[in-house]
Image 1: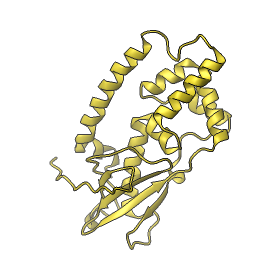
Image 2: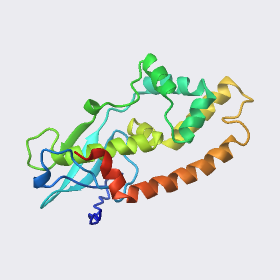
Image 3: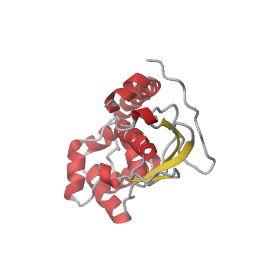
Image 4: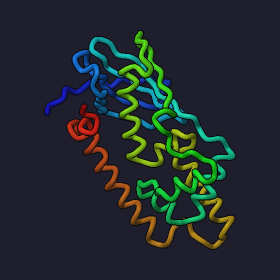
Length: 214
């Protein structure tokens, strides 16, 4: 299916550039469909995009509550307790055991659909409006594609987290490396391959639209 390229709308004050298309009037009543063509990293607690409607472009965002310092401390304690958690995160996976362990520590790591607060400058009265719903679908894909995107949305970026994990691991076991010898090289190679795969999926509009088809 050929899909026309929607325009990408970026703002110098926005940390994210996500282009999505809301459903047309003839599609109302069906699931919104997102057409991502480019995306930058989200801001902590917020992802903003320009969404193309039938006739106008609207500034739309979804917000999620960031974790406080105490919650981050409890979460990172759980991550560093098992080296496999660190390896899984670097390998683009969110271990179910880590999510469950975080829940046990009182940290809700994965936001539910009700945790995403939409905002849009369109005149519609729906909550969420169809523009925010379209962005919400794309946000769900982003969070599922890379655990560090989700962690950034919760308040902390990849490099900051890895530095904190390295420090905690060193304090707990001064002679222990963050990863076993050779593991970092393997994960780096895997990250490159995963990035290429995600970019290919990003450009495949049919594949991205399929999960949202009504």
